[in-house]
Amino acid sequence: MSDASAPSPQARLAQMATGFILSRLVYAAANLRLADHLAHGPKSAGELSTSTGCETRPLHRFMRTLTNFGILTMGDDERFSLTPLGDALRSDVPGSARSTVLTMGGPLSWQTWDAFQFSIETGKPAVDKVFGMPVFDYLAKDPEQARQFSETMVAVHGAEPPAVAEAYDFSSLDVVVDVGGASGNMLAHILARHPRPKGVLFDLPQAMTDAPALLRARGVEGRVTLQAGSFFESVPAGGEAYILSHVIHDWSEDQCLTILGNCRTAMKATSRLLLVELVLREGNAPGFGSADMVMMVLTGGAERTAREYETLLARAGLRMTRVVPTATSASIVEAVRA
Image (cartoon, rainbow, N blue to C red; front, side):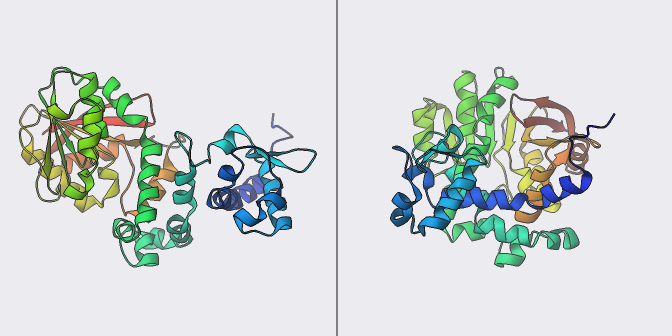
C-alpha cells in the first residue's frame, strides 16, 4: 500500500529543485559569521545589525528562517541562540564547518554549478568555462579561498587516514610511498599505527610545506623521507606499497593513465598499489553519485565503480586484486603489476 502522507512525485521534484535555497541560507549564515556573533549568548537582530552590516528587519526574518532548519532558536524576547548544529558554524571550534560551507556554497562552487550543463554536453569541467582556468590554478590565485578549500578537504576526509591505517595491514611492509601525500597526514597515521615500515612522502615541494611539522608532531619524522617531484613525470622506486589518496579522481582518464603508468614503472614485482577513493556502487544502489558530478564540473576527473577501476588499472598494466572497505565512505582499491 502507498503511504498517503508521502509527497507526490511532483512535490518531491519541486523540493529537489529548491534545494539551492537552503544552500544559500547556510552560506549566508557562515559568511555573516552569525555563529561567532552568537557564541557568547543570545542576541536580537537589532543587536547584530551593526556588526553584520545588515538592516534589522531583513536580518530578523533571515535568522527566524534559520530556526526552521535547526540552526538557531528564537526566544520569547525575539533574541536568537545557537543550537548544536549552528554551533558547528563557529570559526573557533574544533572541526568547524565554516570553511566547508564557504567552499561548497561560495563563488567557486556556486558559479561553476550554474554552468553544470556545459560539463554534460562537452565532458569538460565547467570551472574552466566559468573562470577560464583549471580549478587548482584558480585557487593558486586566491590564497583565502585556497585556505578554505584546504580546510574543507581536511574536514571532509579527516577520518580517513586512521581508518585506512586500521583497515589495511601495513605491518609486514618495509617502505610505504605516499604519492601526492601533501602534508603527510595519511602516511603519519599509517606509520604511527604500524612500527615496522618507513615512509617516502612524494609531492610537489609547495604541497609539502607543512609536512615536517606534522610528521614531527606525530612522532614519525625520523622514519619519513621527503622527495619532491611530479607524479606526471615519475614516482620514487623501491616501495612495497604505493598509496594514492584521492589523487586519481582529480584527473582525466589520460592523466590517470600517466600517473598509474609511472607508479607501475616504480613498483617491484611484489609491490602493491593502493588507491584510497570513494567507490561508487553498481547499478541503481544509492551511493556517492553527487561526488562524481563534483569531479566532473570542478576537475574533469571522476569517481568510479569497482569495475571501472578494474578497467582503468588494466589499461595501465595493473591488475585489481580487491577492494578493502574502511570505517569511512572511502575504500582501498588494491592492485598489483599485471
